[in-house]
Length: 124
Image (cartoon, rainbow, N blue to C red; front, side):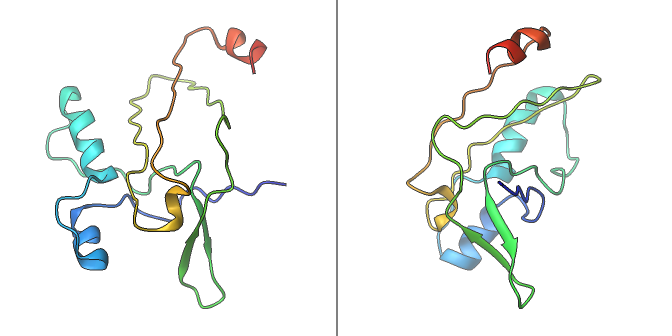
């Protein structure tokens, strides 16, 4: 059974890369969100917390520290979400390449948005 722990880790930002890894101006989910939401008149509102980290393999260790390990997902894995009302959805393929989070490296994410939910269910 796959256990998904999706809301344990905040979106990485420039400060996290600089503080933890000594790397400046690294791509990050926080800025990816703000770039994508800029066209939606997001303004100066904060990035929503916590993000929904679908493919991230994160758990809480015995000492209470958050542990991020190589993902359990593999190429081609998918999930389906159905919105019951209008939503704003911003996606970021995790750009971290300094921890096991991204497994074998940063990869693209394919997204299908449709108003024909039954068609999606037939093709899964």
